[in-house]
Image (cartoon, rainbow, N blue to C red; front, top):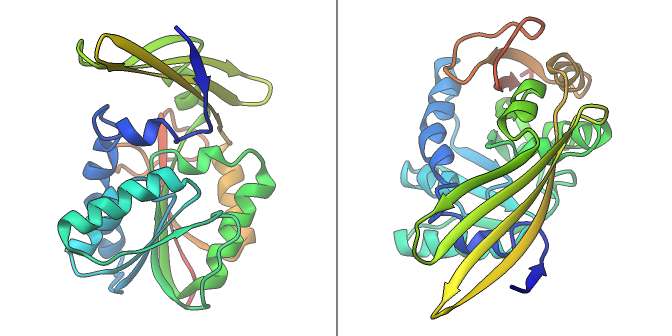
Length: 258
């Protein structure tokens, strides 16, 4: 079988929902919104960073929020636009680099970034660029909620080996061959998308690299960019100690001081 290598989220975009990758956003978006509201957030303008196929952004639009979704993948954004069209909703979709936001000052009141999107930042400098750029466009009092896989989470979730992520035993199978490097704290994942077209199968491969960071380093970057940390939570939204946590995923809630 011939393997065609394509950029991340090019082939995956076409099977993203079928393979179950939207479930995290479907479940967590209302909970992230509720977390902000529990801490007295009451704005209307929401930014979905690394919005993907638009699950979070479109749901927020159904709740009458004014939503902007930004993603670097044109393929993912095409599916996001189609999702909004089906729902007859307006979302401001923008293709761009979340490290280089081009939005007016004070134009955002709540930002979300979920499902390990910030683990794709390959260096502390990249992560700081996201935090600093968002701070500049956030309205005073606005909030930022995001999640990241912890070092333990990234090392143990994928580890080193082959994982069948999805297989409908008919026309679609998604395999991930992963390798975790403890020196660089990075996980390199070769994502194979196998699709059937009649009697023939096509295989496309994407290479995804995620990096984990110590929670204390993430907090330090947030605070250096000007954010006030409200809390860190584990997967069950239980407050988490950044030093002693054994969580696989950390959820951060921060605020731009008013």
